[in-house]
Image 1 (cartoon, rainbow, N blue to C red):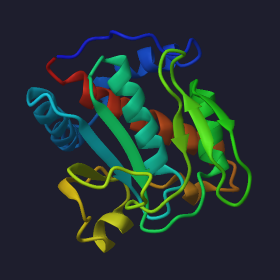
Image 2 (tube, rainbow, N blue to C red):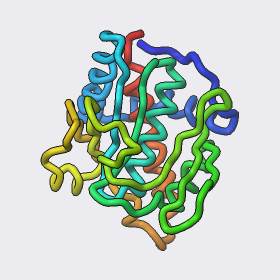
Image 3 (spheres, rainbow, N blue to C red):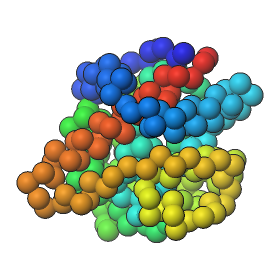
Length: 212
């Protein structure tokens, strides 16, 4: 099993430590799906090849970004080499500010580097790792790696309406409920935090199971 090897941002470290102590809260049926993600990563490690993961939801605005960022941070935290994480949608919109705020509250440092309808953000999880460039895009955007990747489907709509993901060599149905359903309600902040923590907990579990 992978063990902690790399230092995260001081604001993010407590969140990660708490989530890694909550793996027993993950239902067994979710762990079965997460094992597919672990196995894809493991296969690449065993072959000493780069591992490409593309997290996909319809609008590439919330769940796919949260998953991509957590996966890159988890790979770094557990010292899993050669993992490159991307995200995309069946259409492009924008990285939703509510999701950005929820990730900041979890301890990630996020700064906007461009304005407009689809701004670009730099996301940091460690002082010693490059920032993730986060912005909304289609899954096959040239910014993403477009062959030999695992398509990790983070929403049911994209999973059901995108039967073929060109370039993918694996497809993993890791669906999450959409916090968008609680936008502009009293539960908004709590539901976004809940989704951030669920995704973090599960992605960290998947990477913790990789044998190095």
